Image 1 (spheres, helix red, strand yellow):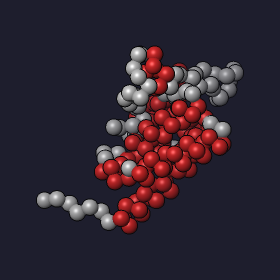
Image 2 (tube, one colour):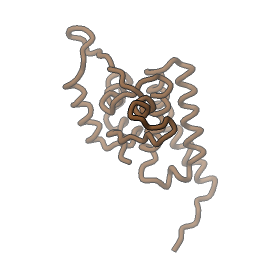
Image 3 (cartoon, one colour):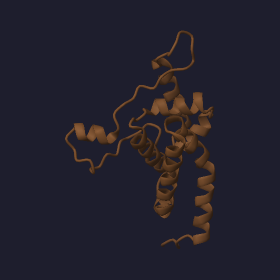
Length: 167
């Protein structure tokens, strides 16, 4: 038995619900790492990509994880650095004040994974000054730079497994 394709209005409504739920956190994340105009462009690019692939995205295992992977790639490309999953979780939790459940919803991760990443980040923080809760992100090369260093062509498959995503 085959399923009937979803009606366009249902797909449109589900996309806008996804957009309304995720856009504020995605924009805040991008603003924490990019100039305001760059953040706006990154978020706009992401949702253009999500909208263009919506039927595929929603038929996948975890639409939030798919979109989060795309967003972190765009932000990494624009910022010139890739954050670890623990750094992402900590940025959301400590700087943007999202709860573990909110982070899990936005990134498509399990709450237990987010909790584990936050605990790991607390153990490995680099304080910026004695007694401060602030800390510095250590920049890592982007996926494109890593693939170039490994001798892979720039246009090659640079998919990486990111602990904040299930897929």
